Image 1 (spheres, rainbow, N blue to C red):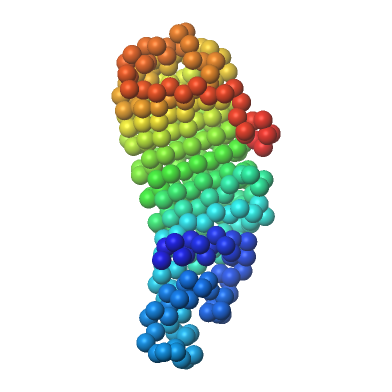
Image 2 (tube, rainbow, N blue to C red):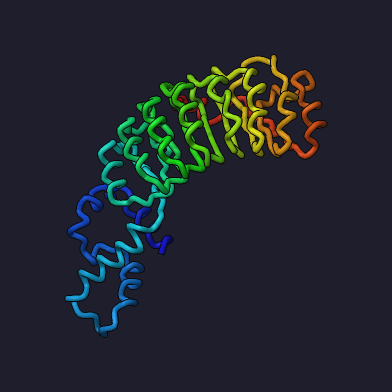
Length: 289
């Protein structure tokens, strides 16, 4: 039934908020055929009598759709705080939310994140192009204690204070991505040794080689991406040698040399795969960030 719910959401993304607000006027004719067929599997009458439709539709819809843990992607950039509020009010078991960047900047603010923070079963949240989100919004998300994956892209407002407060509260976090968030410095990751992060991606103009002294505190790290942030060769990747679970490291191609401690790191971590990244990626070349 989860696949039916996901299909229903995906096919009706643009007018989902309107449909949610009209839940009390739910019409069986507006439901997808596969969901209708599923509903009538529970009907004993042949053919089913109209008087059974309303209570049956309400019961099945509530049980297998509203209460099903589902994901939603807001593809349209015109989404507003009020749209997010309407969706969250109806679908309280959302487990994954994504705001992708290819369609431009979204209009949501910290108000939307305060609403999202009420989703107790939220496990994944991807925020791209949300340039109106600040530290307050990130701190609101600290209430999402089941959050395992969090991505924040192209934020020029969120600072170390918001990130540190969020990380201290989200003990279940396994994957954390900060791409082109240029107010973030290495100090956002200091004193966070209790985290069980397995995947970490950091990209910021203000991230320096000092972060290499801090990251070994994350003993569970398996994948680390440090591309597009180091502006000079004054780095020593051998500082990451204590990360004995590290399996993959991605760095800028020009930093893959003997002077940056890569040979020593590979000797200390023989199973480590080092990926050389191109100097510029889609985000920088497109000018979106």
